[in-house]
Image (cartoon, rainbow, N blue to C red; front, side):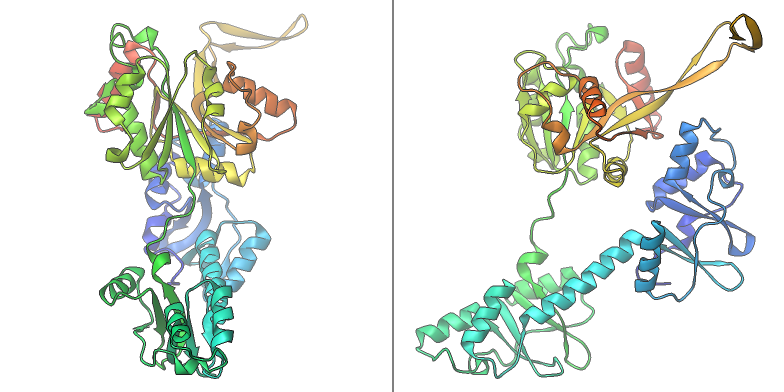
Length: 475
């Protein structure tokens, strides 16, 4: 199996008879956003993606139907052994995220993920760029090395032979000491290089490399192959550096919860306990698990209870900011008061209990280049009468007590920074107002069907159900 494929192919193989509901659960466990549908003997029958499932939900397909009924029966495939660069090129040309690899008899042997191949390709390119920027010859002058070091921004370079064999390293500290000693800047860098620098053999994990650097108190670590050729150059600051800027989240926690009285007379609705902890704590935990560490809370009713419980958020593994609304600003108005970080903002109503994949909705938002993504839930209404269908005065049919399904707002959104800028300052402004504004100005607003557990805790009956579901382990 290729190094950038799945570690366990069995995780992403399902039988054609598996129901859509069962496939959804397997898809969540696999975390690959696709399953290979295979019959006996690993014969590939189709490819089932999370997009196929969401379209099936939108089309009201029964979740008890076999998953093969909604799978792509003739997906783009390739033969085993295809170079990763060629596989990535094919996936880019076909605009696909998954590429099954089959043998001559059509049996599945691998499933490549475009995201992993792209990361690997980018890493390879960056690695080569890094090496070119830090490798110098022994004849290079100290002045030349200093200029190259400043351009590379690495604080050190590696001195290599023409075959890239490691001969030494020169750090900015070496240069500074040479200057203090009065060494001429046109002297060769070989005169000030560390001749036997600490290095590690490829392959090496980031963890073990960092341990080596900490043990020997060094900030740069060449990685060499069996022949002593430099294949990588690790920087301590990158191994312990900050993660890329992640999306932030806003939780609307200012509602009074009047329909839940007397439960909310002394407790704000988001702080009502569900199972063993407050509802708001569950939501924050889900966001943290999705890698979202910057969370803002818009508060109004009994806001001090929320602040007392969460404080800075440090105890919960996040950084919390509070935005107290002196007067209600609607479901979107408070967002204007919250400082963004240039990334999409996840917005959640504080009375929602759900198991939605925040990584999934963010990826969906980016895929569609949306200004606003709104989570939706199917809601069925049964008409208690026979519905007469007619063309003017002529009756064309009758449906006895039909069930109509609509998609309703689930209270979960992803907002692009450019859309947030359209929210007026200090005015009541609802999310529906923002949707209409974006649609009327030609911006892209998309719906994200939520197929995971979801419950709006608006009434005592809903609250009772939430605690029952928590006890049953459904959330």
